[in-house]
Amino acid sequence: MQKGNIAVQTENIFPIIKRFLYSDHEIFLRELVSNAVDASNKLKALSRRGEAKGEIGDLKIEILIDKDAKTLTIRDQGIGMTEEEVKKYLNQVAFSSAQEFLEKYKDETNIIGNFGLGFYSAFMVASSVEVQTKSWQEGNAAVRWTCEGNPEYTLENIEKDSRGTDVILHIAEDSLEFLENERIEGLLEKYCKFLPVAIQFGTKDETIFEGEGEEQTERTIQVDNIINNPEPAWRKQPADLTDEDYRNFYRELYPQSYDAPLFWIHLNIDYPFNLTGVLYFPKLGNSLELQRNKIQLYSNQVFVTDSVKEIVPEFLTLLHGVIDSPDIPLNVSRSYLQADSNVKRISGFITKKVADKLAELFNKDRADFESKWSDLGIFVKYGMLSDDKFYEKAIKYALVKNLAGEFYPIEEYVEKVKPTQTDKHDKVVLIYTTQPEAQHTQIEACKAYGYEVVVMDQPMIDSPFMQQLEYKLGNLVFVRVDSDTVNNLIQKDEKPELVLNEEEKTKVKDVFTSVVSDPAGRVEVQPLSPQEAPVIITRPEFMRRMKEMQAMQGMGMDGFPDSFQVIVNGNHELVAKKILHESDEAQRSNLAKYLYQLALLNQGMLKGAELAEFTKRSLENL
Image 1 (cartoon, rainbow, N blue to C red):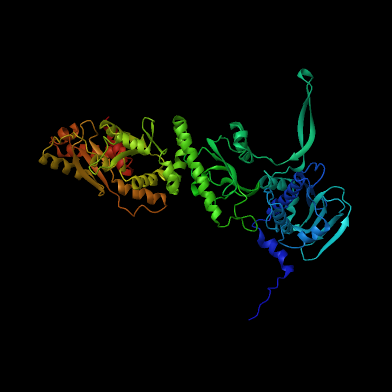
Image 2: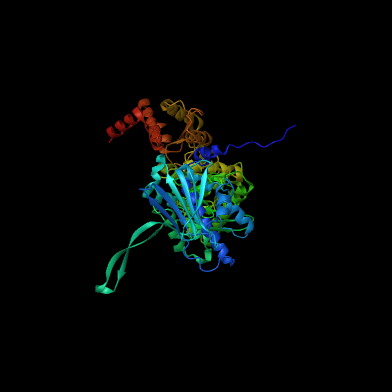
């Protein structure tokens, strides 16, 4: 048996870095600015400990473009490096100075770097990289390190007045876009917007006013263009923030958003993992898709991604805001989340915080909670469908709305209608409408019996939500106002008696069967109230739901046969007298057909030639 070491060809490392280390070349700027922030924070840490003497001064980071020289410079005034440190940190790929610093000063939690590869991302866009650095330690000469993207480098002493490091990228011909001001400013806005050290990119005009009243004048001056907010809201204590502070931060995150958030949750936990953030509830309306990917994930204030589906349940991606955690496991390029037990724990914690916040709002001010339900409803229902633990909490404040605009938690509403809407199987029947205007006739019929009707007008979410409640609660069933079960399941103490005898009932049924041209229609004569419509179209609840689910999933509508019931009200005057006793067969048939088509029209089922014929005949009878 032989043992040995695998030989690594160091000359191959730079092409690998350039092509495969990062998903996008623009990441180089995030990595280099993050390193500059680390250098600044290290100096702050040394100063706090009394190891760095005197004033440390302004630690802002500068980003400089020189189009003539084709260079992009990242300049910090942080800890700097000695010649030995340059040899140690820049000449050993994947040796992390940040990691070594943290080992020495374990309680310093604001150091960003972890992998030691970030610096080498510079070679994705630069033909050569130059580092000019001077250590904070007195007596050490400044040095210049240069490398052209191969294992060879040069190192020499130079004159440099100030402490800190300049990383100078000589931009390659295929990456000249990174010499454009707009491109760099856009990347700084994207990746560095909330880094904890001020970042300057050029200057900007600022108007100042001098004097008072009529003597007041204004003039424009040049000031540093600081592109980041080093102290974002999520890094502060909730007690130090006002509602307006939270709203202003929302506008800072989403400058294009015109709607203010409904409310927010401030996350702040340090055990068993570190997590801070602010999550906002936006006005969703009926939109499930347009609002996604608005949560920004940070690691020590460094932007990582706005795709957070690995760290929060899918339904929480409808929220907006920021999550910041150094404990989130990222891959070597900080571009992707890795599978880890912390991810599940963080996900569970966020879900609990959201559920508890909603419960708090409901219990504290139910009327205000109800006023927000049109935006909250789709989120809460989606969460209940997606997460069992969220369901267990949310069932207490998930609301239904009746036609009078009154809101009830599900379990409270079930108790309310139980006395009048319990069927022969001891299930509470919850009657709902999807289109209150289109289903007006059926709604009025339900009202006539004293039944309550709730509005469920978000088919994409309400259909599976109703099925979930039926399964989870077990003691209820949802039926639409035009369902056959409205007539068949609900048992009343006093049911109308059919005024027709069996022979007359058969005669009426035969008349209507002859005019129902659709083979899917099945005629039944029932004893309804004389005030109800003479003919009503109903559909089997189960079959209709299956067809709706197929349609939502983009499947064809042929999986379940279409069928409907033609309910003839045997107690209506037009049926019990006019049709039954009409001696002219043609007249009897025409009237039955007219009533049938009127019922079809009411259901939106009268179309094409039949609709044209119905319209023509109606006009002729005027």
